[in-house]
Image (cartoon, rainbow, N blue to C red; front, side, top):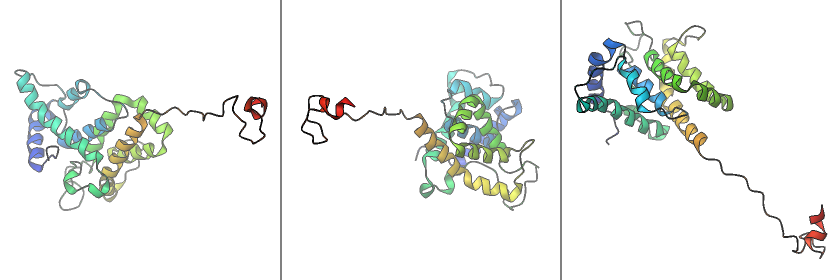
Length: 224
């Protein structure tokens, strides 16, 4: 399946980001996954020319277009995998389709002091920043969108945000696939063109009145 991003793909991309992005203020793999999820479920499209530079921090000087495209390729592969991932409902979802969020194997809080899911959420919210107004409009019309963003914000943390705690964070991470699927499906519905409501046609003015009076419609109920 070409749009599945394997563990080997993830390891290779993580190494690339560690050498070409993170030292220059760019993204880690976890932050990139969240960022691309935000790009994919955005209420308005975000051109690659706008979001790709954010990945690198200070975009490297490529040797040529081929070199640039070779470095872009694994990022676009991950984006394609995310586009596939968010289409899946819970019945079709597998462990392979989980977001790339590092969780300690021992089950306790991370030793590095970075809470579980914080980097992922920071990446997602950075993508939200491209279309803050449109997200705000969507929140205004759909309360569940606010609830979804609040859930992600709780992973990011910050002033005024209630800390869910380690166990709470693990629970939220487990909900992310369903949250992302709902945002994707809700976005499609929101973007779908609305069909105009046409008023049902009544009888012609010279047709018999449907009330059964025997008169023409224009001389009976059509006069009202």
